[in-house]
Length: 336
Ligand code: UDP
Ligand code: MG
Image 1 (cartoon, rainbow, N blue to C red):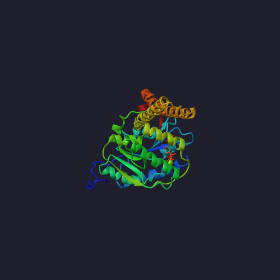
Image 2 (image 1 turned 135 degrees about the vertical axis):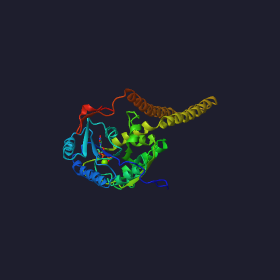
Image 3 (image 1 turned 90 degrees about the horizontal axis):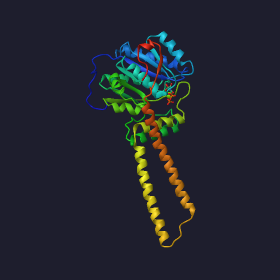
Image 4 (image 1 turned 90 degrees about the vertical axis):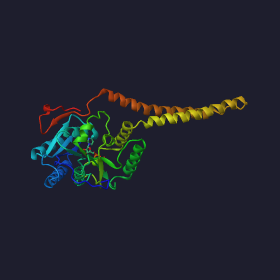
């Protein structure tokens, strides 16, 4: 806890926990990690920290392998396992959102976690404790990133720094392993943007929060679905969905270049008036190319924002649930 005054167990009732797990082509890891999740639920139930109505909610994000079949089989084996299936692959962030929105009316707390065993499942104990102590959001923070490549560590650190410098409130070294109470989720449901970046959006809701630290392990099997291209796309989406600072920077840079050009023009005119010949065309060409390039780059950045506005105005659903393992799909609205 961050403050010194410790208020223990201020919650009146034992919470029901939903663990929300996005899964995309995870047939290799699911049979292993699903057991670990169930063991964790059982342990927390035995310790009377959560109720036995708690569930492990898998979100199949349009997997092309047998992931959905495995989820269906698991839910037939034990009532603690439930699953929803997205109509197609929509990406990790939308899969987590679909799970959270599905869970919000059925439980008191959710914990979102990846299904590949990289995030330490034992940190859930401390997350639930923090909730019982009065926190509404608990961020899982990686205390070290030894298992990531040097390149991933370097780019991730640069990204967090850049985001914070741009004015977005992002918890350093926190990804999407976090506890959110259903109270916060009810408020979060009002954040309707299509372009979502959960780790930047959740802090915007406010409420009392804290962090728990854990060590991130290697993926137990399978391969990361975040190659460099997807990572860059997520970083760019994160920045443009949380901050308009790039546009402001462009304006400042434009002003600077314009002022310098003005000085250059003055210099050229005075030079011509006092009889000096203008320098060769090479320098002129360089300047024209430079300004042209910068303008195109900046137009691209502005275009990116306009594209986002265009997508937002369509109000398309962020996820579509095509199937559920545990209740009639028609019984509930299944878009969001
Ligand atoms: N995932 C998803 N949809 C996607 C890509 C990934 O639901 O389009 C899930 C994936 O199954 C995993 C989590 O998101 O549970 C994180 O993905 P991954 O482990 O590949 O990312 P990394 O940990 O390498 O950043
Ligand atoms: Mg992973």
